[in-house]
Length: 370
Ligand code: AGP
Image (cartoon, rainbow, N blue to C red; front, side):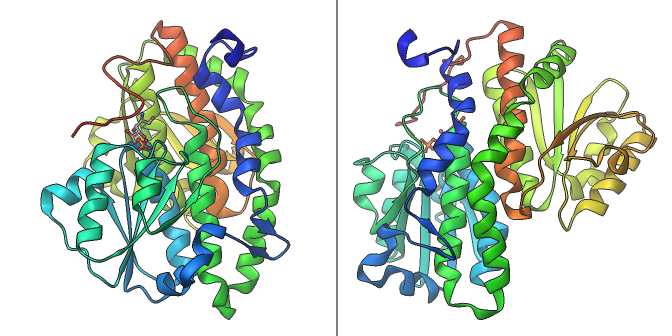
């Protein structure tokens, strides 16, 4: 086991640091100069069927659901097809509508999650085209779906999913690029994203240099009872996923929240003690996040702001926030970079709080029961 961990103390730590490599293997042979080739969707004209869909339904649990949520805005943008999000268990509880004209995407690292597989049976019964996005070749999910794309992130052992999350987002970006490749109006945007994909592994290496800074941040939060994470737009999923990591491994109460909802309740929690992470990297929502930061500061909020490199004074002119500066990448790829410091934070918090990193209390890597 020690050999497999190499020079790392834990699998989660190793898997976080492997991301420049896992992102490379996810894209290998698939991203060409101005095109994306996904063998799993080529056969039987699946791409054409997806393009004709009335809507796309993204289905998953936990981190895999969050990856699909991160993908939603750019999939809608690049394909022009509406996306509906479904937590697998909730779709089943509601027996929500799934139509023959839908394409259902099932996102799962293991490909064996019971709720996701039952949702797959349900979608198959209802006649939808079912596409699997999984890390596990030969898994039940990859066998039962009509077609799919393997994320090729390499074996993930830590119960907390890290490198699978970033690779799942990248696969969804590639799917969006492939499905939307017939749209003339988005050609320039597509090219920007394709170039961004090529530079993503080096940007992931860059952001991993924040390791020591995140360890220091973790030591300042070690005794906190709770942590809020505010995100919006492309980074709403980053807020949910960052909070999920802290919750599941560091065993600290943490909630990811839509910053646009702050005024509708969560603002009441703000005081000088509760740590709040605000994700405010550059994208179309940037000025809205600047205003969220001002509102939180005026309530004496204890803020940690994640911003694009060089933006510290733009996000916090008073200098009263702790700032985490990350490399700026194409807006829709930013969630891949932004989650990495939060994974590092969750990892260090867990070690400092003395909990089991790779085998958190009460959790299993693959949830094969309902
Ligand atoms: C991730 O850190 C969690 N352990 C958990 O939420 C997980 O993502 C979920 O159980 C889904 O697993 P899957 O991707 O294998 O389907």
